[in-house]
Amino acid sequence: MNNKKIAVLVSGGGTNLQALIDAEARGELGGGVISLVISSKPDVYALERAKNNGISSAVLSRKSYDSIEAYSKALADALVSAKIDLVVLAGFLTIIDEQVYEAFPNRILNVHPALIPSFCGKGFYGLRVHEAALEKGVKVSGATVHIVTPECDAGPIVLQRAVEVKEGDTPEILQKRIMEEAEWKILPEAVRLFCEDRITVVDNKVYIKGE
Image (cartoon, rainbow, N blue to C red; front, side, top):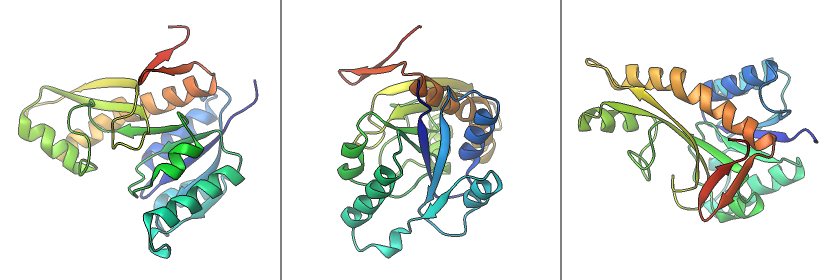
């Protein structure tokens, strides 16, 4: 089984990137290798994480392109030329179009900090997700890893993990608990399943071999 080359797309601090780097160091990515980090913004800490771990990185700033189409083409070209097998969106907050999805069908994973289909879709990112969950008074929230399709947060679900919502939670406290108990666990796990060729998509549903 050939090692699969992974690109991680980031826009900020890169905590999920770090979870993947740590998992790779422990041999838990199913032979996958993080070979490229692309940031939509310069000077973000995720780029430092890449540098500190000897991972090639690039900045593709959205401001440098006059349209989503031009940006998406540049991104798809960069990923294809790097011979990437799997693309992971880890807090990547830039809108991309179908050129990227078509270049990597069923090969883009995203982690969302809620149990899809709750608190997802347009406008639900970062603390907004947790604010909405707390406003609704849910007893559990969590995280979802899904395959990315052109419709926001609507792609086939790979893995989910529930996290208890506690009395007195603020959006920040809930965000941290979901990261630690769910995101940082199921994202590396989903990447491992992909790299071990255990994910199959049929009729917008994910089937995992060997389970």
